[in-house]
Image 1: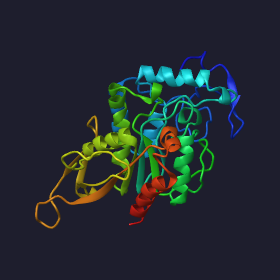
Image 2: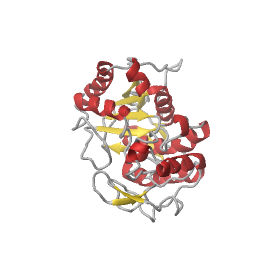
Image 3: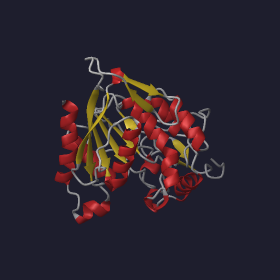
Image 4: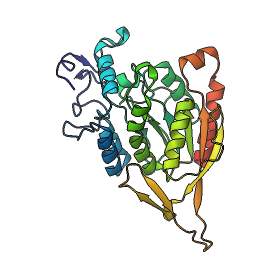
Length: 313
């Protein structure tokens, strides 16, 4: 992070504390787990190593928050943090990768594409700071998965109920389009987080086709069996996946991505014990979808309500 980019300081809209943009790790931003001494992953190999070493979602979040493995994304997110949108010119921008957020033992996992340049890249919390986030949090609240109907910034008092949010790509990409290399470089963060929470997850809600594909790829790497032909994305699409139960699985954390190996069933049949996780498709609550009526509030509530019902089973 260059000194010239961090020169100007502005008050945080919730705390009033002064921060430069991008925000240096360990400077007191709400919910920031990164420190000035946190090891920085500077390339794909370092991402794999850091992800494999993490033993909790908090450790993943800490390592993610200082990642600089993709030069194009680093330059974009930090340039946006300095140039800013005119309406936010007087406040600091987070300008760093966005970590997963919510319960560390979730029953519902929400998977999206990436933070928005003036949304999460500004606020420091995934899915906040823009109209898409407004739609998402309002629906989560209506179905009982969030304690408040809005979330505008990290540290605003919002809390997810048995739910965790993650992005397939943790930095805001230009034109909302990460490259395949950037997607693959970032994948170990999602793999590590999924490996740590999958024991409790009952439903995975995928926002948009990119979230759907990223989630399916990650679930395959965790040992889930994907039907053939591969399930297609669609709003309200649902596929039930089997994966090895925790007590009969061995997770290899030394691999570049976590591998789950099944062992014989306790009933002596030699079969694989397994449990189910439901993968649910949902149109992304982008303005393009909500303004045109492609996605309505009842449609969004129906998918998230289905996830909430599964979480209670």
